[in-house]
Image 1: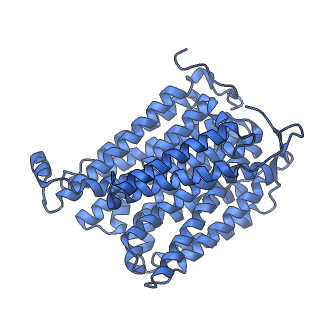
Image 2: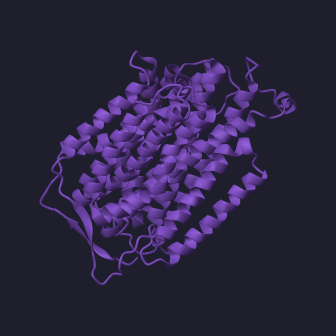
Length: 512
C-alpha cells in the first residue's frame, strides 16, 4: 500500500476518561437510540398511521445510509480532520432525533417524509461518528490503553445494540412514549459535545510527492447505485417477485454497477475505497467476519417480531427476552480484551463467533410451546451476547492496528461500513425470508408435524424458524472468513507493551 501522507496529531494532549465518555455517548446515540426501531416500529407505525412498507423502510434505511457514506466520511476525516467530522456527526444525530421526535401523526406524505428524513440523517450521523471516533482512539492511545479504550467504545456499540430492544420497549410502553427515545438522544448529543470540547485536531498531512487528490465521484456513484438496487431487491422482493422482470432488473443493476465500481477503484489514483487495504489478512478477516456477525442482527427482528405477532407479547415483554444478551455482552467485552492480550485476535474471534452461532440456534426452535421457547430464547440471547463480547475488542483492535496511520480513517470507515451494511442486509434478508416462508404450502407444514400447541400460527412460526436459520448461516460464514484470512496467533502476538506486530504487508498465500 502506498503511503501518501503522514499522521498529524497533538501528541502532548492526553485524553481523559471524561473525554472517552463523550465518545461513548456519541456512539450510543446510534446503537442504543436510533436502533430502537428494530423493536418499537409496530407501535410507531400504529401511532403515525403509516404503511407497513414505509415502516420496514424506516428500520433499514438508517443502516443503509450509514453503510453508503461511512467510508467517504472516514476518508474525509483523514483529510480535513477527525474531530471536525466527529462534531458534524453529533450535530446530525441531534437533528435526526429531533426530526423523528417531531414527526406528526396521520399527515400522509409529510409524516412519511419527516420519519424517513430523520432516519436518513441518523444514518449520515453514524457514518461520520463511527470512523472518526475509531480513528481518534488510534491517534490518542497506545498499546493496552488503546485496547481499554476500544473495549469501552465496543460497550457503546455492541452493548448499545444489546440494550436497544429492552430500552426501546420500556420507553415505548411507559407514560413517556416512544418519542421520548429521540428527545433523550438529542439531549445526549449535546452532552457529548460538551464532554468533547477542546479536543485537538487529528488528521493526515499529505505527502507533496503523492498524486493530487481528486474526489472519486465515479466510484461513489457506482457504489451507491449497486447497494441501493440490492437493498430494494432484498426488501421488496416478496412484493415485486424474486424472479419477476423488475426483480431480475434490480439484480442486473446491482451486478453491472458493482463491476463498474471495481473497475473504477482499481484504476483511480485516489479511490474512495482503497481495495489494497484488503491485502492484509488480519484486516480482511476482521472486516468480513464483522459484516457477517452484524448480518446476524436479523435474529432480533425475527425472534422479537415473532413473539409479538404469534404469541401476543408487548414490545416490553419481548425486549425482556434480550436482558441476558445485554448483561452478557457488557460483562464479557473486557474479557475479550484480556483474551486478545493473551492469545492475539484469531482465537477469541473464533470462540466468540462459535458461541454466537450456538445462541442463535437456541432461538430457532419455534415449534416449541411459547413457555419452552421463552426459556431457549433467553439462553440463546445470553450466549449471543457472550459470543459478541469475546469477539468485539479483538476484532476492532485487529482492524485498527493493521493499517497505515495515514489511512486509519478510511480503514475504520470500511470496517464500520461492514457493520452497517451487514446490519442492513441481514435485517432485510431475515425479514424477507420470514415473510416469504410464511407462504409455505399447508401440505408441507402438515407433513412436518413438529409444531406443538396452537396451530393457527404455524405459518408464522415456520417463517420465523427459516429466518433465524439464515442468521446461523451468517455466523458460519463469519467463522469461515476468520479461519481463511486471519493469520495464526503467532503472527499477531501481543507484545508486553500491548502493541501487536504490524501487518502492513500482504500475508503469505493461504496454505503456505
